[in-house]
Image (tube, rainbow, N blue to C red):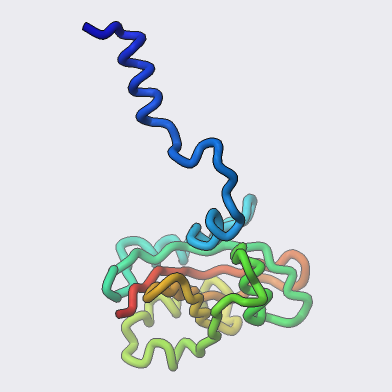
Amino acid sequence: MASDEDYMAFLNKANQDPSEGYEQSATATSSGGPFKTTDTGVEVPKVLLKATKDMFYVSDADEPWEAVGLEWDEGGRGLPDEEEFARLIGHWAPKEAEIDILDPVDWDRNGQYKEIIDAVREAGAGNDVRVYRVGREGVKAEYWVVTTEGKGKGAKLVGVKALAVES
C-alpha cells in the first residue's frame, strides 16, 4: 500500500504544468490570450455595468458583454485609430492587428443592440461612439463598442466588448 507521501508526490506531479521547463515564444503565450478591458484605477461608469448585466452578443457563441475602462490620452483626437486601439487593448502585434472601425448604425442595422449603444453614448456624455471589430483566430472576432469620457491626459476609453463566433 502506498504511503500518504507517495500519493501526494503522485498528485503534485499530475498537477504540474506540462510546459514547465520549456521556453515559450511570445506568440504562443500572447496571441490567444484575452485583451485588456480595464486599467487599474479606471472606474467603469455604472451605466455600462448595468447595461452589460444579463446581456449577450448573439452569435454562434452568445457571449456576454463585458464593461471596458481604459486610460486614453486622447490629446484632442477623440477616438483612437486602429493601431492606437490595438495598443490600448494590449494586442501582441498592433501594426498587424486585424481591426475594422464601424459606425454603430451600420453595425447594428436591426437595432438589436440599441440599449448597449445608448448606454455607451450616455457614459461618454454624448461623445462619438465607434465599434471596433478585432479579428481573433479562425472565425472569432471581438466587438468593442466604445466612446471617450473626458478630454486630454485624463480621458478614458469606456464602453463594452463581446466575443463573437461567426461561421
